[in-house]
Amino acid sequence: MGKQSSGVNAYLENDTTILLQLADPLTFPFEVSDITLTDATTGKTVPVINVALPQAFPADPPEDVQPLLAVPAEQRSSVLAGVQTNLVEVMLAEAPDVTHSLHIALPGYISGPVTPRNILNGETYLYRGDDLGNSYQPEATSFRLWAPTASDVQVLLFEREIGPLQREIAMQRGENGTWYAQVSGDLQNWYYLYQMTIHGRTKNAVDPYVKAIAVNATRGMIVHLPQTNPPGWWEDRYVALAHPQDAIIYEVHVRDFSINPNSGMANRGKYLAFTEHGTTGSLFGGQGTHNVATGVDHLKELGITHVQLQPVQEFASVDEQDPDQYNWGYDPGNFNVPEGAYATTPHGTGRVTQCKQMVQSLHQEGIGVILDVVYNHTFACSSSDFDKIVPQYYYRTDDAGNYTNGSGTGNELAAERPMVQKFILDSLCAGSLAHPF
Image (cartoon, rainbow, N blue to C red; front, side, top):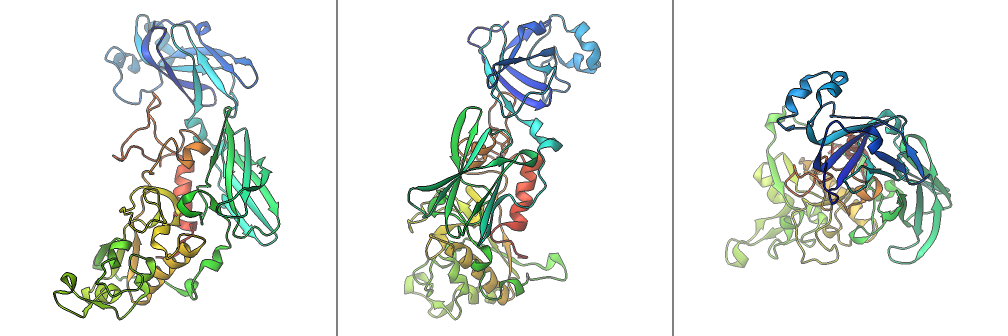
């Protein structure tokens, strides 16, 4: 048996199976009666009916366990005597409620919470609707959030970007793990947060589906998105090539493109620099050749077919109000909103309109636009909005509860999970920049 100080990590993997990772191994045979699963929300005990080796180990099972994995699962109990393992499956007689606080305890180990993980991949929690986020109409705004493990969700409404809470609206549980509320009245240009209570803890989060945002992503913004379109936006078309291999791609950072004081552009470091024409500058700080074409005119001289923009999705590493802060943008915070540091003002919807103007201007010059998107990780992890809303679902974790680092940046989105896949596809197809680039 493990020491009294040994810990456990537990994931609810389907309706009636918990995967239990132990800091110290236990030795079979192990009595089912020694494991207690308590629903702390109701005070009741959930019956345990079996403890066994996992049906399949994720990777690198212990050497003494490997031969047993070849034995059919229903026959393993007879050959497990003396086997030690850190990873076991606990089978339940009934399905617990994922919104309830569950705690598992066994002798020699510190009791621990049970976190719903792969159970949320099932059809019960797969929402296929297209209305996640806020949906604005002048007469009412609706809100829908996927938060299947929450026991309570509120919409917090603010009239301004910075200012006190004006209204708090209780959301109602909807289908497939969603929560829904409709608020009467015209909320255009109001701001909001979600407040979730999950397993006894209450946190505020920005809506991951939001398409406009306060400075530095402190609150989501309710907007009528068509009003952010520059004239002719829906008539604009992407640049098509007869053969994809004919593409000549120029990678560019929005700020770097025009920030040089000799660029001759008025909107240096901004989206709108891509809308300027006829600009010229001098090389080498004014000591070299003069009247060199800059900006879009220079791109046309190069003969490129496409610009690939380094990330323009809102990223978290810079203060959008500080023009001297700099980052490449590979640290996304909000995938559906353009970065505010590249707009002439980070307040309001200017960032959305001006980013669209950049794309439109390039198209008008026959230059296609490719977005460098970073859906494999985020800037933050445990403190991210994703993790506040559905703890340990959007990010990959190992069975010990550690966030994995396949991206090399400290975390990785679990793109194999249905609702993570849905978010990525929805973001590409219906974000604030939704458009055939």
